[in-house]
Length: 265
Image 1 (tube, one colour):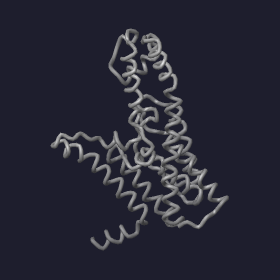
Image 2 (image 1 turned 90 degrees about the vertical axis):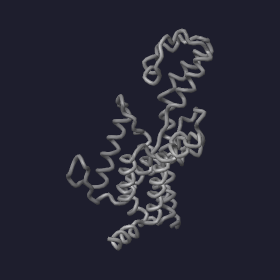
Image 3 (image 1 turned 90 degrees about the horizontal axis):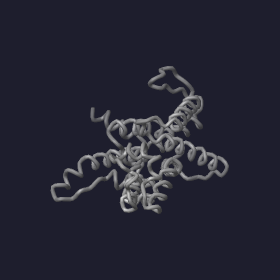
Image 4 (image 1 turned 45 degrees about the vertical axis):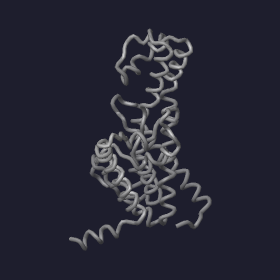
């Protein structure tokens, strides 16, 4: 059994192995540290610190564009991402070499974060504009049209009677709400690269147990993500546009490397 475990671990390429280890360690720390440190009166929330906040939030900083991709919302979230990293990342690291693979993984993850920030900016533009107008007018009357959105996040009533100080506080709370975690952007980048480099390899989806070519698999996944992102179903908290962002930056990077090849391995 020990020999099997050793051979299995040694079969996983170095970068993939370390990425999986970092993600597991950080989820363990996320679950364990708060209760451990609370004994000494220290309150810490790693998701709040390392997760990616909206760029206009007081909690945002640029390092979150990297740190967010190593954080996860739970063990099932972690498992599926790490399983995909193991399945597709191992092949790609062996094909590209560790340095190029790590560059690709990080850039697609950062790109996914950037696309998610653009999506948030578009999605929240009207609400934030209304909040700014209400602050300038020292009245919450202009917020009544957006009460259905604000009341979805906050328990409140009588928005029309809000004054500037209350609205400023409400705006800051609203800006602090969005937070994204997970390696899914990078994983979708890996999926895109696998489909691009090995288009005829046959894969199977869990909900459609028929082997299909990798390029078709990637196209189907991309279309599903685009549909879910545009549809924006109520209760859907998945960052679909971040997934598409990982794919988009993956395409860009592969095309750059194809046009200007270099020998980093």
